Amino acid sequence: MPPKQQSKADLAKKQKIVEDKTFGLKNKNKSKNVQKYVQTLKQSVQPKSDPSKISQKKKHEGEKAKEKELNDLFKVAVSQPKVPVGVDPKSILCEFYKVGQCAKGFKCKFSHDLNVQRKGEKIDIYSDKRDTENETMEDWDQETLEKIVESKSNEYQKNKPTDIVSHFIGFIILFSSQ
Picture (cartoon, rainbow, N blue to C red):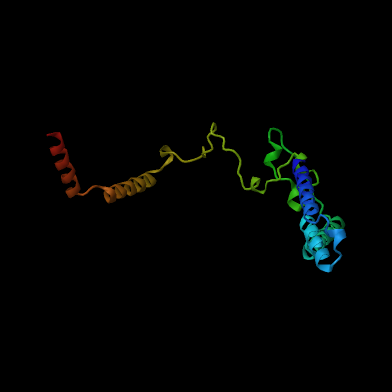
């Protein structure tokens, strides 16, 4: 509420300034110029809002009223899902909010953050989620075993250091030990 008190105080100060500037002018001289000067000073203290802004505001309020009326007429049947035991309701997006019909506001026990839906579940680091049905080496037949050994040896040959590199590494080791 302090901003309103300040604005009232500022308004009173401005009115005092206007009274000081127009002291004696209102009644003494009835000319149009003096009256015009007094009016401009008064308008500077109490500025009127633009008529275009007022019309825009009325138009905006009219649109909101129409939209609200249409929403009331054509309400979509929305049902809030049941919250499972042990789940925080704030981790579930409010279905009414999603449609734009939640009237509870901040008192709603569901989340009004649209990013909540994008967030995944928390990962359980204490349980192993890997498939336990994976084949092990003991279940392979001879053919599969030979294919895998061959592929691994090809991979090793491809990544094996060349003779030049191995000599160079040996050369570096020789000089670093001395």
